[in-house]
Image 1 (cartoon, protein in one colour):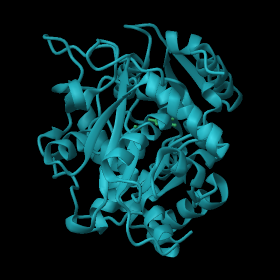
Image 2: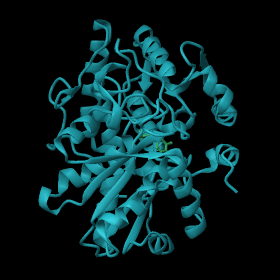
Image 3: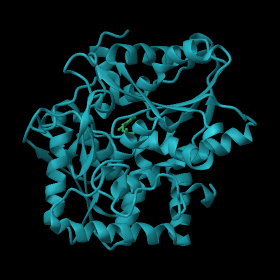
Image 4: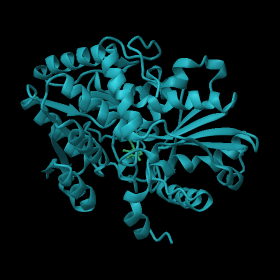
Amino acid sequence: MSDALLPSADDAYSSPDAQGFYGPYGGTFVPETVMPALAELSEAYESAMQDAAFRERLSYLLAEYVGRPSPLYKAERLAEAVGLGAVYLTREDLNHTGAHKINNSLGQCMLAQRMGKRRVIAETGAGQHGVATATAAALLGLECAVFMGVEDIRRQSLNVYKMKLLGAEVVPVDEGGGTLADATTAALRHWVERVEDTFYVIGSTVGPHPYPAIVRGFQCVIGEETLVQLEVKNIDHVDAVIACVGGGSNAIGMFYPFLRHLPAGSRPLLIGAEAAGLGVETDKHGAALTKGTPGVMHGFYSYLLQDDAGNPLEAYSISAGLDYPGVGPEHGSLKDSGLVRYEAVTDADALEAFVLLTRTEGIIPAIESSHALALLPRLAAELGPDAVLVLNVSGRGDKDMDIVREAGVE
Ligand SMILES: *Cc1c(COP(=O)(O)O)cnc(C)c1O
């Protein structure tokens, strides 16, 4: 894999400003004591990205360990079933550990190593980011602790076991609802106390600056590869590019290179699918962009599901990777500017799309990715039967078998 696929240090488009703001969103809403650590992290990231040896090693591991580049697969039976001209799937599900998360965990663990930190911590909900980080830590010989809510530990026992096998300590968090938001709060608090020897590996484009920019930097290999493969396949026109949005890392990893390299007039429609859960008119969803209002959580300002006092609400989705009450700040800015469109997809529609991809292509997707797939029929109606779409299959569905079975899919 060519080193040119990694972001350069002087990216211009929508890079946050010096204070880490994307329009009004982002920033660093953290205790004063953490500011030096964030500044140190910014410097380390910038210097790593300008270091040919670091980039070469990351490229090498992405190719030989993660299994990149991910194929851009033409899903012909799927396209026919939904009535579209062509649907190309980016196969992040084929990565080692089964999703896009390893791209970021590996990059951040390499940064930790470069900064001389022997220990990494991470937060996890379903356990996917925890497993990816424990994997990268094992590879690089780093100590690893993963903060996880007690409710999630109960629901995701297989991933808990995997993390332990990989040598990580799983730290139970029993505050709040015992889910992802609580685990994130606990991990941030722990980082404040152990910042000298500990690196906090954040799992999505969230958290205080510079994290959203760093995670984007490590994930935009998805979109960079897609652009290269479209060119290799001589596909010179794409109508829309779709990805699901939890915190927003696989989506920004796909969208950012399109925004950066293509002029507005020649850009495909970029669409993010967030979780509508049982419906955005209920209080059981994770649609922060569709239904949220701007507020501060976990060190950054963005769209957020919150009560009147500004406390984050419990988000809900059938997919554990999408049930976060906030969303990355860059997505807030992209929504406001209209550069990206966001739509909400219910559990039921996601499950239907899950079955459709499984049956038409023999690819069992993650339920998160199924939210993006559920937009295909809508887009066929909007864009017509000749439209060409690219969709990011962010992960595979192995982790979701129990949930799908419990939902009655057979
Ligand atoms: C975690 C996860 C997501 C959601 O995270 P983003 O940061 O929004 O990408 C989506 N798909 C899969 C497979 C995941 O594991």
